[in-house]
Length: 610
Image 1 (cartoon, rainbow, N blue to C red):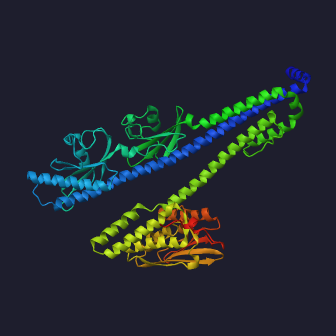
Image 2 (image 1 turned 30 degrees about the horizontal axis):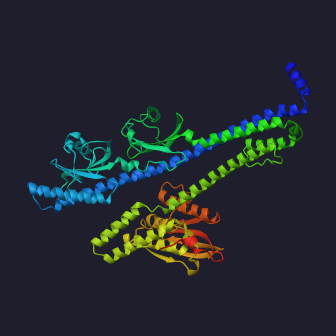
């Protein structure tokens, strides 16, 4: 009580100007500190969260590229096994003769080099015969005799099946490589005689570490990120920094991952370590971990600059307040009330208040600085929101634009078989349809095309599929000329007819029918994809529409993607519906907006075909 009475008495003796200073300065300092701390916290958390998401996306792209390289190597191994069998079958010479052995070695080297020219991800190949003879695809400058004592042949032979490819750890060695100084990842595979089942030898394919580390660079120059792979022994097996190659990873990262890893149920996890943000993503094919390290200091450099700016503005305001105490005593109350209300709005979560600056004094400066900072925060949040929307568009566009690799491979195989059977006209038509399909699909990256072009894309796809499955279905496309210019997201019909073929007609047991037709209903353009396949019950139809079907995951994702893209481009009133009856068939309807009366710029919709 005594202290309270003393403070009241002391405060009552002060002049009004001093009272304003005594009250205003603590409030101003406290408000600026709160604003600085909140701004710093909001900026830092937003930047770290966004960087974590970007790193996760980049990591998935890197893992996809790595998986593509390793799958290509396995595909190359399968093709080479077949070609080596053919070479042994077709070679007429007696390999017991020295000259014939040389000729056979030259043919083998030529065969391996030719196969490698198709799979450029693989740098070298070596075939070791059962008699120990080494046939490299390159001019060997090292000691290939080390293969026998390395134990690699025994490890490949010890696999459970001759059809299994065995991957060896990244390593540097003087044999099985055209460049002993380069680290290589090696794939081993047994080669057996297809007719007799007797082993012919062992095939080794080598992938240089540069193939894997070529895309481990960061795409964000403002916050450079260091990516590298580590194997199960906690060694760096691929990295942009070659000095760390095949060296143990930092103890802190190794301890965080643990002996068995921390990723049984999650694709990645992140944590902070010594001022860095570390993200770990698991790659199951090789049991590797993709590590990303980004400096938090670099990442939050702009945040610290904003904090310094806030501190500077606050200091200036304090100095000006001391010199303008007399004016502040008459004018400070109303501006401070407005500024305080605006700050309270920020504290409560509203980042779009405006503190009116009616004067050019310190309060006006504070209001302007406050408006600038809050406006900047709002702009950054808008940018984040816009970026998320763009990301959603990119993800949906990526899902819609991904033509499964097996479709291309199977079509090329079909063309090959047609040529082998001298069915040249069908091979020609298939090749033309495949070329037209991909030319129309690419379309210079534009996502909206006209219905006529979408029908042509679908027609090319169905023509190819009908050649592959002549006894499964026939089809009919009926698009009225007056509706041919209707805008539609690219690849909206192809996933639906693919679902109809694979999930409806192939299971039917007899030849089915697909019809694509368009019409106008209730002011909307309705495109129907109808099949008389096996159909679905109501529960499966609802699951596919929601994108949650576990039984037909590919079908669910394709249908859900088309529906989402229609809503994204045209609004929630447009989309996709599915009607199906088990044993009778399925009808999928797409609702599209009608063209406006005024002339549409077709170039904006369908792009250039040339």
